Length: 112
Image (cartoon, rainbow, N blue to C red; front, side, top):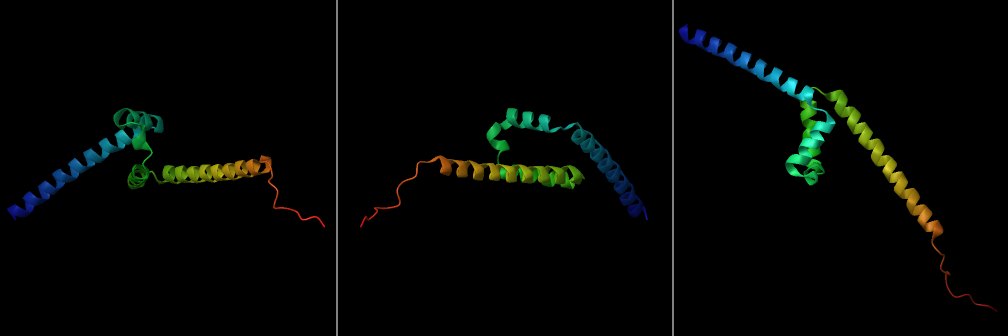
């Protein structure tokens, strides 16, 4: 019986410690804003590291894991809209460029 009581006491201590760490993580995550994250990443590793797709995937997965699903979905939808708009703008710019380009003759004309 003594061993069982020791294990239960240890379990309670570990659960308290987990709760404390969870509260600390929640407090730290609440302090993070996109500006702080970008500034910290730019200062620590340079701007090139921020652009890595795996870094963004890890950040989104972390936010999903810590219960910020709404923010992640909002961000993903915003990015999708921005990419769609950029693709349309590129298509429009290509079309305008083609329209402004001087037209070359299609081939030699034969006159009879």
